[in-house]
Image (cartoon, rainbow, N blue to C red; front, top):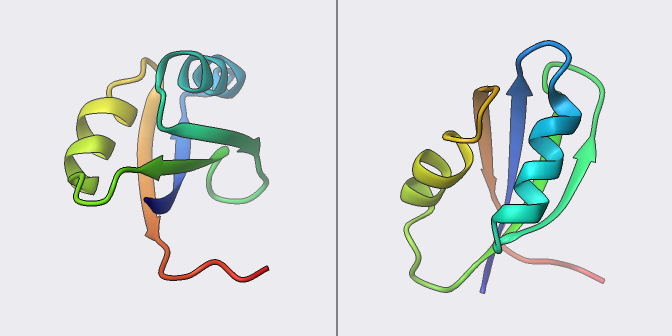
Length: 80
């Protein structure tokens, strides 16, 4: 399993709509956080090993209505 974080910019006034749709309709989206700064949301996603990250972001996340831009962070190791 590979973990990625995707920062998402939304159309003004639609961050909560985008967050709700992501967690309700995309199985790989584990959590969505509202954040401050350049982006509106941070999505934590778990993808099966070998799944194409670019394809997932472009075809699943960027096609959510009201998403304007994304920035993907690929993780290497989780520490606990």
